[in-house]
Length: 228
Image 1 (cartoon, rainbow, N blue to C red):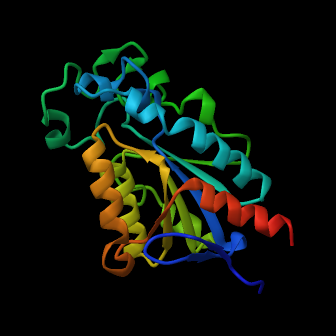
Image 2: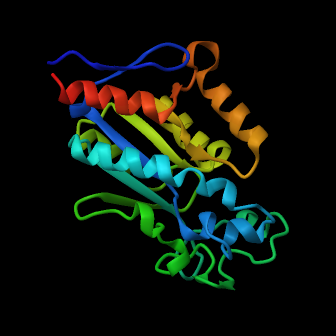
Image 3: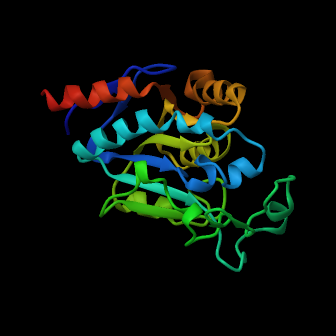
């Protein structure tokens, strides 16, 4: 077994073996990131999430080049909404609810254009896409079994939103024994204060849920590996 790669991170350096690591790209969907989708229907400024795209594109390219597997997730529901709890369907006061028609088809419904991942970060052949009905990527998806079959032990986590689907997934992963590194400039929130506090919570108390680092530190570790 080779020495682990080290990423300068909070609360202390994060070590990982690329052979047992996957990049997780959470919910970079039109319905959340682009105007006219569910995120905007809730009154949010979706441009705040678009800042994530350039660094995430760079991370995605470098990860693919390093041979590290990539897993994408999409939050959404069956066309009949049978997997959408009534409480989730009724919650809040959006201008459009889940299942309503929107500019990209029915909101957060599988198979609709809005449910799909944005073009800039689209999966390539062979990359896993997990469709999830909840906030966390492990709930009702089989992701844990898939990762264990791949012998993945470490997750580099990116996507949106920091305090909701990213946080839920990191907590689920932590409880299942995965070592998670969250790339701070590759996750985003509609609320700047939630972004700050969400990242602080992950690395708090000696890394209670995981580690946090800017993407440049992760890329530097991959570059060091290629130079060996």
